[in-house]
Image (cartoon, rainbow, N blue to C red):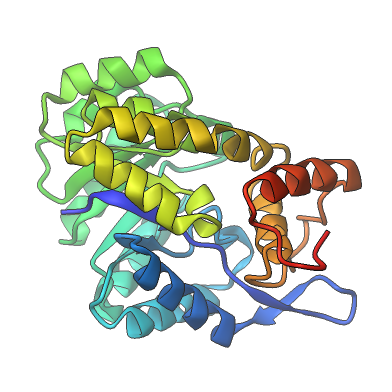
Length: 301
């Protein structure tokens, strides 16, 4: 159902009196949706980790989904982030996304409370039993404190609501094991831009990308090339993006990508606490890579 380059969309904010992220910038959010439609992004994924979902109220969370769905207007699919460390809250958010009109949901593993593998299975079983909706499991141990193992994900592959998994463990051995265990019963998506090409080469269906916020067309073309079987051209495109992926990982996401988008003149980089502006030396490193790719807006350094 979902394939190709899918953007883990940032959430643009106005600056408050202290210069931090304040109210949602709806005009900028609508502009981002139009940008991705124009540049070939296949799926827009709002209110995930990159979208600072942890700092949004439930009302804001639903508002962002509604704006993205309205602005997309069927031109591109929308997969809304609806995960939580509370199963009941994940159910409520997923129902809201479905009722608003999203095409699917991205559901992160419960964070902080660190469930066992059996707890993860029961969490996702409960969610699927309460909400009939296409969902993608999201495994990102560095964020959540729990690693959902391949055998655990494979146990859920028979549930029709789970159409895929966003794999961001960073462990290629684990990802290879996952492909073997799933046996094409569920799509696998890259959750780490630097590993998108190898995951596509293994048979992945796409990526849910941070870098696509800045270079949507390049990411879309790389995925389209790989999915059409043109792995040599896809690899060349991947090689040209490695340095960008690297600097976008210098600090906690979404600090670097929002900074990069400001340098490129796309949006303001305002973020809500506890996220803070990028370290000046890291910003220089980011700007240098962007300048080499001609991504810097004149006067933005």
